[in-house]
Amino acid sequence: MAATQPFNSDTAYWGVPWEESYGYPQARRVGNEVYISGQFNHDEDGNLVAPAPLDSEGKPSDFSSMGEQMRTSYNNIAKLLALYGATLEDIVEETLYVLDMDAAFAVVGSVRKAAYGSERPQCASNIIGVSRLAQRAQLIEIVCKAVIGARAQ
Image (cartoon, rainbow, N blue to C red):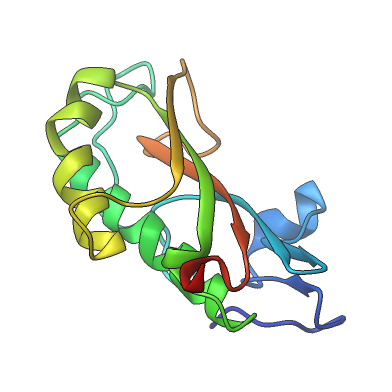
């Protein structure tokens, strides 16, 4: 299922179960600003891409899929932004929430540069270590704000 705008042109959804249970859109446009809710490593059907293996306590035991999860998160963001005629170049601020800072720093530079298509992405960026994310096999979640037309400035 692709990202859609079933209710109005200002909000976007994937149609995944957690939108209904939690009660939120994946993106919301206000004027020329687009706020993207936390995106993570799911495909358009809601299946996790490169899920981390879990230990006996249900915690990730291997962080080697951090890069693939990060790429998937940026791809999801790009698909949502496209609904508003925007691209990653319109992002002015992002926050990455990660379970393992060392694993994130090992891949974040190359993954971000590839996603943004630039050696120096032009958005403010924060990275924050957390103890848990929504899906147990999830290693990263990315939240961002875009300003439509920012890339042209």
